[in-house]
Amino acid sequence: MGKKVRRIGVMTSGGDSPGMNAAIRAVVRTCAYYHTECVGYYRGYQGMINGESVNMNARSVRNIINQGGTILQSARSKGFLTEEGRARAAENLKRDGVDAMILIGGDGTFRGGQVFSKEHGFPLIGVPGTIDNDIYGTNYAIGYDTALNTVVEAIDKIRDTASSHNRLFFVEVMGRDAGFIALNSGIGAGAEEILIPEENLGLERLLDSLERSRRAGKTSSIVVVSEGDKIGKNVFELADYVKKNLPNYDARVTVLGHIQRGGRPSCFDRVLASRLSVKAVELLLDGKKDLMVGMLNNEIVSCSLDQALKGKHNINKDLLRISEILST
Ligand code: F6P
Image (tube, rainbow, N blue to C red):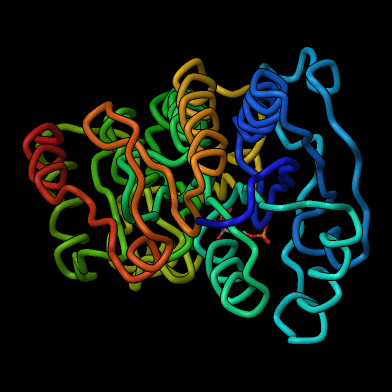
């Protein structure tokens, strides 16, 4: 049986995602509910290394459930990759009297946490927050749903101008090495083609399919390209190649970029963040450690951080078939 947890630290790390504030709020308020102290660390691991912390109570998180970004800010800390950096972070946590940590972020955040826990024995629980949705052990990560809605709204607007001008648009979306955003936003926005890293469509098939669309009477088209896709690696070169081979098409490129990470979280992300974070605090108070909370089939569950890092969250390849049928 580990030491009783009386003071919990919380931080957000890696790429921010809409709903992280709802998660912070839920951690802080759950701590308050269970009469447990709560400390926030700024800019993820960097704040732990620099000792930048703030005591938080239920009122510190008023009116943030609806805000994008993260009030604790975020960073991708290089210092935490070093043993020395992690040792400084551990000293600061001890100095602050923190018994356990809640890490809100993606796989990079959890990898750092795993090493930290092995070296310094701090119990920790991961809460998945990344628009990429590439985390094993949960159907959804916080921020993914909002990002999808942002992308679909943007593509709807692009479609307006694409159809006014009879143009082909390549829309690059985020996702790092995973195609979740591209695949689901592509279906949601009715894209003609979706290019994702998990499935290599190949340049020839793309040309064939665009040509078929044109012959079938489509005067404008949208191709959603995941930033990690092999043939779309450089979306501008891809568009040039298509223009050269299909001169009938007037093609343009839009890179949606960081707008996908901002904005007010959807209701889905707020509820998800709330459910996951209440569970994260309860697990720590129950003496559990080194777990990640997730939502599978609408149930809040947990798995070891090890499993979360080793496992692969696969995309649903049937969605590609659906997209092909529906873009006829
Ligand atoms: O992991 C989230 C994410 O937005 C990825 O989709 C993207 O590849 C990356 O972060 C961009 O990172 P940065 O904001 O550091 O440029």
